[in-house]
Amino acid sequence: DTGVSQNPRHKITKRGQNVTFRCDPISEHNRLYWYRQTLGQGPEFLTYFQNEAQLEKSRLLSDRFSAERPKGSFSTLEIQRTEQGDSAMYLCASSLSPAFRRSYEQYFGPGTRLTVT
Amino acid sequence: KQEVTQIPAALSVPEGENLVLNCSFTDSAIYNLQWFRQDPGKGLTSLLLIQSSQREQTSGRLNASLDKSSGRSTLYIAASQPGDSATYLCAVTSMGSGQASPAGKSTFGDGTTLTVKP
Image (cartoon, rainbow over all chains, first blue to last red):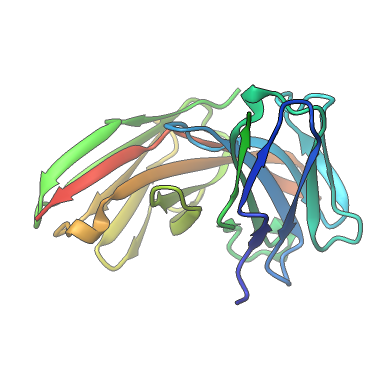
């Protein structure tokens, strides 16, 4: 399968614990995005990378959230000291950079559903 | 700040009917607009992408149009089928910060939940 993959698919954690999610993009894609989606809402932008550089970060991303893409391939999203309000679906997407002058189309993974109890 | 609105929030139609979903956005300085489909509890599947210089795109029974000056896009679904039942989301990608990064982040609407009854 050459699509975007995310692990784990589901995570249940207690308030105050740290969690880490992983995203593996489509191999030739150099852009990677993280979004958060709650029930009945559209995805909200969190951050995106071009290669290993984090180009933009939403104000939604508090100090408890950090994302990395150390070698420009997979990415991790860590949430420290989780709160019940962090319960959501965390979506990852990848695309080619617009500099490639091809269709700048985002492809999404299946998401990681986080439940904080 | 870009804001994206989708109307209606929910739509129920009988099988075979043609229908139109609407998406409006507040900032016309966009790089592109993309329509997605989302099934319950799943990720997003890309349906159509329209570049800012284009007026429409077609794929099978789907046709998406873009009027950048008025901040509107429509997704037309012909001859709807029960399998089309899902939530449809539009996402607007804003212009980026310069030549090195011409496309910025994407802003999504909250979607239209479509039910096609047999």
